[in-house]
Amino acid sequence: MCSAHLFVPLPTMFEKEIEEYERLRKEYQEKIVSKTSRQQWMEYNEVLFSAHSCAIEGNSFTVDDTRILREQGMAMIPVGRSLLECTEMADHFRAFDYLAGHLDAPFDEALLKEVNRLVTEHTIAYRAPGAVAGEYTTEDMAAGDTVFGDHETLIARVPSLMASTERALQEGHHPMVVAAKWHGYYEYLHPFRDGNGRTGRLLANFILLRVAHPLLIIELKDRSEYISALRQIRTEGTDEHLVSFFFKAAIERMKDELAQKRKNSLPMMFF
Image 1 (cartoon, rainbow, N blue to C red):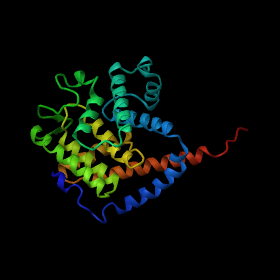
Image 2 (image 1 turned 90 degrees about the horizontal axis):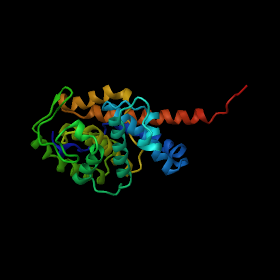
Image 3 (image 1 turned 180 degrees about the vertical axis):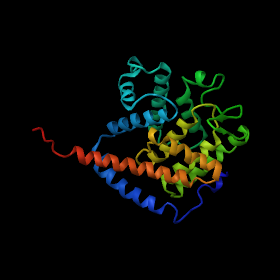
C-alpha cells in the first residue's frame, strides 16, 4: 500500500453516503449539538467513545462504569472491574482531553506519538514489557490472526501518511473519507507495540473534531464488522469497505440520537 494514492479523487464513489451523512449532520447539529453546552457535549461524547473504543480492545467497562470513573476518578472503581482496566480508561481520558484541547495542532508524527504515549503510559509495562509509551516498536508485530510486515519498512511510511492526510484535508476531501482512509492505512502500518487501535480511533476523531463534525463512535456490537473491514485492506488491497463502514456507523449514530431526541421530547402519560 502507498499513502500517496490514498486520496486520489473518486468523484462518484461514496456520493450517496456523503449526501445522506451531510443531510443528517445538518439536522443533528441544529437539533442536538447546538442546543447543548460544549462542555456537556464533549463529556457525553468522551464517555461513549472511551467506553466503546476500549471495549473493542477487551476492556469490560460499560458506558455507566465509564461515566462513573470520569466523574469520580480512580477513587471510585466500579464493582467487578480491575485496576488495570480503570487505569487504561483513565489514560484514554487523558489522550482524548489532550486532542480536544489541541485541535489546532499539526497532524504529524509528534501528535501521533504523544497520543500513543498518553493512551498507553500507565499500562504498557503490563501489556508490552520493555516497550516505551509513545515510541515505535523495535520488533516485528503479530496480533490476532495477523502477522504484520517488517516493522522498519512500515514505520518509515508513517511520515508520508501523516503529510498526505494533512494535505488531503487542506485540499477539501470529505473529512469522513479522510478519517477512514487514514485509519485503515495507519492500522496496516501498526507502528507501536501497544495501543494502535485506540490511538488510531482517537486520531480519526481528531480529523473530524478539527472541522466540527460529530465524533465517530464504533460500538462494541459492530466490532466484527469493523475488524472485517480492516482485514479486507490486507486481503483485498482496498479500503472501500472501511470507508463505507465509517459512514454507516456515523449515520446510524445520528439517526439513533435524533430518534431519542424526538421520543424524549414527547409528553409522558402518568395515568
